[in-house]
Image (cartoon, rainbow, N blue to C red; front, side, top):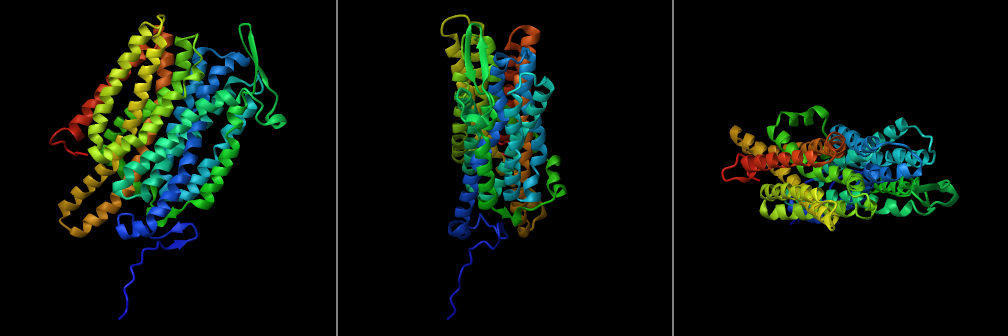
Length: 473
């Protein structure tokens, strides 16, 4: 009697997998889980480096005036903000690249592109006569790192079953987001020593009042180069392209007609936009509001907390529901901003800085949890909407098609929503700069942020978390 063999091996042609069924339990346990996990753990360091390059100017601008660059406060805020503007804009395009080019190929290409801003930055800061316009171009090119997030999240979403998307996306984004903390921790260390010897160029003289020291500001860019090269090679030789995840831009563009895509974009601006915006703006804001404090000693703490709690947000949302977690996240964020305003009002009193820093830690923790919970909501919302359409047709076969289509479209939605949210990296630091220029302090910008968080609370409650919500998730 012939024995029936269950074929669970994904068919492969080189690095291309032509059959992928993560919702099939046998397939997943036999081969799928191992392949998905490998792609995830190669994706994470690539994304971490992308965030590091994206946010490198948030640290570098603090030292530029002390090594001979005569830029005013508004010009410095522009340099901190512009990577957010270009990164967010690139995300709009990167959102659709994985289904067109393949996840392995695009991850390798986009990671290699980080070499351009990293190397050029290291060269430019060595010459005090480098014009401000060149720094503006460099800040815009750092946006390559910001764009990578959209394609990375889109790619990883294809590999995992629905029940594990929250944790997988949380790990990819959360550990990738650690790049913000890493850059703000590593750069202040490596610029104090000649890491690359004669190959790294001559040091600069850092001066503030009567205090002088030797610094290698170019290491802020150069330090990432060997890691970028290694990560690019790992992606090219170790990751996979999923043939089942291929789609044209036209096939993906239907997401623009979905109301909930725009609503979730609004909410993700509140969570991730706040995380990346406060990461970009906090070092310079701290320097200006608390002149006696060295912001580079503390700037890395907030992004680290936010990044580490992002997987926690995904995990909690898998258990309790994304909408419920998101609702309370925005409540906590609004309260924390009120705390920041309070401590800024008494900033000349003893202990005010520590209260200010503590409130920002609460903000970062909340954004981290909210990043995980909102990204958990998106695939659930997409699947719910497609299944409703399937039910209207009354055809059981349509349900399976709806599940497949929701996976494709949710990946595009994940990428596009992250693109919209990334504009927070531009608007938050620029809002601080504008508020200080017009009113003498950042409080006006902070009150606007509170109003925005209140609108996010209302949207989350009405559409997703209340009893009888249109799309409970």
